[in-house]
Length: 215
Ligand SMILES: Cc1cc2nc3c(=O)[nH]c(=O)nc-3n(C[C@H](O)[C@H](O)[C@H](O)COP(=O)(O)O)c2cc1C
Image 1 (tube, rainbow, N blue to C red):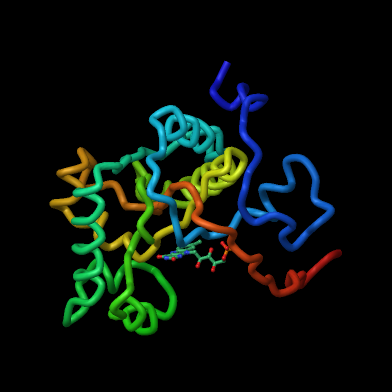
Image 2 (image 1 turned 120 degrees about the vertical axis):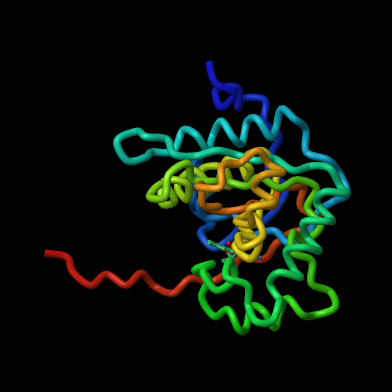
């Protein structure tokens, strides 16, 4: 039995009630009501809950079932604060650091401007961060599927998450990889902030799906 089988005991999610698809039921609710959470309670996430999220992540599909993922969990407040500060400094470095230039994030100039604001906090004050690394260069897309599983599972137990693509440059730095016991060859796929949401998160909008062919 996996941890996911024990969901009968899960508390009801408290955030984002009645999001964009009010009729969504059962498992579909997580898809429609998950939100990027950017305000967290000052309350730790238990080891059991982190393990549950990682377990959900590794049940994602992957090409030829290669499961090309590894997880680094950061919960120590001091380490989180240091990474948040270092990640911000790296984002703002002039000329832009190679990891920033290669981060693959759209509209980097605007993002850098955002990061320069006085209230900017890279992890939004979350008490936990789960960083997903791809254990092969071409494993990043599989890791994104794992990331979505993790975020949906978090929603089902009332935890909030936020993907932190802006922290990817930091977690691709050789010294940070060494500190986290991560191979230099493994690209950082996605850091994910995790914690108990502080307040409700309003629904976000979506453009209609662009279906370009239906033959
Ligand atoms: C690859 C990726 C990177 C992201 N990076 C950040 C980030 O660095 N900081 C942040 O606050 N949100 C980040 N987000 C969250 C998006 O802004 C958010 O998913 C989007 O605005 C839609 O909102 P929703 O998730 O609440 O529906 C990221 C999302 C993805 C998929």
